Length: 250
Image: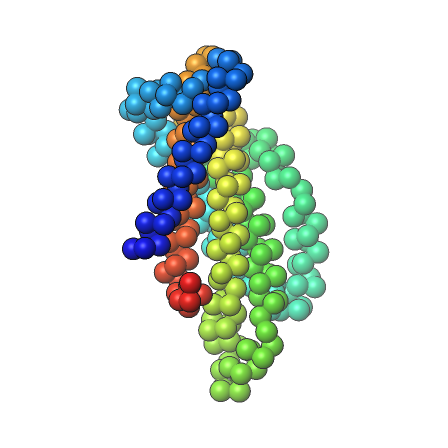
């Protein structure tokens, strides 16, 4: 309870600071492209019936992409981290593709999967897949040999070592990759929805910008910020449930 109150107060303080900064910059620049916060929040209320379904579309796309990236990337990364042979064969392939900016494949995805959910989800999932895979691989390789030997000395087989030592040891790093990936996912979501979609918050923001409705545009930006915060907090909550041992001393 105390931690929840402290977090709420932290968010409130940060929100006050950002709104004050926003207000100051708006008054300083005096540009219609940067409306005062009151006008943006007024548009949130006015456009609420339109924002809610767009928020839902975006949230479902990000959630699906993150689930795919996690369920595919984490196991493969753990296997590469613990199998020298697999890492020698597939590691170079991963690291040849990892530095390539995956957004360049959006035109290919649009041709193959068409405009809409499939191409948007696929693009975000591909980006998160590589981030999670590399993090899981490095986390698995960093498991102390003494931890593995102590479990093997008790008669554990390879599967038990993997599930009882490697997976728990790597989970905190995987959750860190997910938290970082949440911000990346929302950024890619905006880009992909504005190019490959006709629904979602990215499309809402881009559409308002095209109609020179800047207050409405910032209402969409606020909704995207809320989506990012909710994703981050959902990952934090999941980590607190899955990695109880890590947070017991905090």
